[in-house]
Amino acid sequence: MTDENERAVRAAVDGELRLLDPEVRASPALVSELLDPEFTEIGASGRWWDAESILAVTGDGTVTSEALVEVSEMSGTVLAPGVVHLTYFSDHQGRRAWRSSLWRLTPAGWRIYFHQGTLAEAAG
Image (cartoon, rainbow, N blue to C red; front, side, top):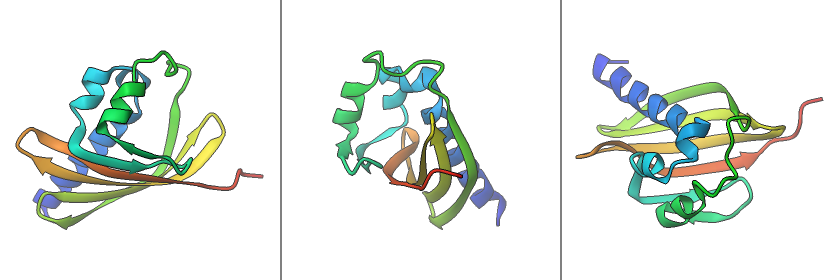
């Protein structure tokens, strides 16, 4: 991987981890800094989200510091200049999912463009 590609993947990983931080997730202002205006998500629930609907639920008091998301197996690949695909496994209070995100470089910096979660079987 070239230095430029490594920097791109690192920026996407950093952004993804910020979005998973409960303090960031509870703040519509901080979340909006990371969402592409054209953001869409297919949640693990099967629900479709866009930037507006995500921002409407952030800051509603449902995200607490106890609501930590454990992340493992995160990896990233540069698909094209300015586009990074991340995959990882998450565990949020026993709700386990495989996750996939597309990040793109915009004039405002790296922003998440698309995200999908797919529920995984519980361990054990």
